Amino acid sequence: MDSKSNSIIHYLKVYNIFDVFSKMNIENFQVNHFKKGTKICDKDDEINRLYFVVKGKVKVYTITPEGKKLILRFINSLAIVGDIELIQNSKAHNVVEACSDVETISISFEVIRKTMLHEPIFMSFLLENIASTLKISTGFTALNLLYPVEVRVASYLLSISTDSTGKVYKADIDSVSVSSIADFIGVSYRHVIRVLQKFYKENLIEKKKGTILIKDFNRMQEIAKNNIYE
Image (cartoon, rainbow, N blue to C red; front, side, top):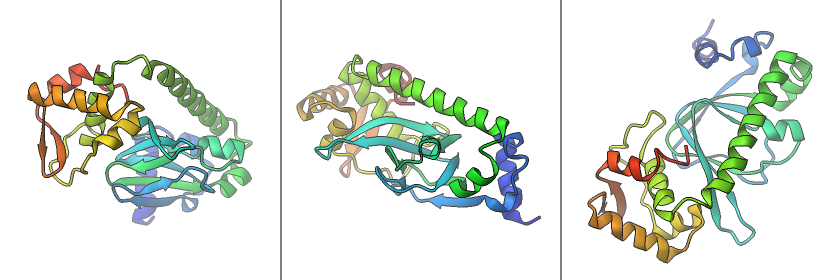
């Protein structure tokens, strides 16, 4: 067995989904790599593969008709991309972007439809994941509007500053503009400015070469309610 097959089997077992795909030929899987900042899929893309994020963190967001981006959530491994599109036979509903270097294993919709859609264990797994995702998304969308802006800004800064294991990025942190934060969390530019100024005064963050860096992660996690976006 080659290294690719060994790697795929390893991930299937690590995330306890080996039995779900026990009747699937391992050769039908691909290993995919996405660099930080690249998209696994864009909104309204034709998507034809089911992706399992096995390493890294992804950001899921939507784009309004006015072109503004609104964060939905950040997902660590094991994130599944394309499940709703598979069932609905639709284009991608949201943008899924790599927040760190991401590794996935994936399988084509064509193969799944030919070999797996009548397998009870697979369909049960898929529908359970979709139901869980919709429950989280529905609850979060309503609850997010009730959180103070301070909590939302702190949570967003935490999510873009840590990898999938919660470790802080030591280098190559993306520059963060106030306008992008405001867009992603759905509040006004001025409100974000006021919150950031408060964080500066309390020595929670600093600005270095155009990048906002968190100085006190423990305190920031307290403000973020342990991060509402993850």
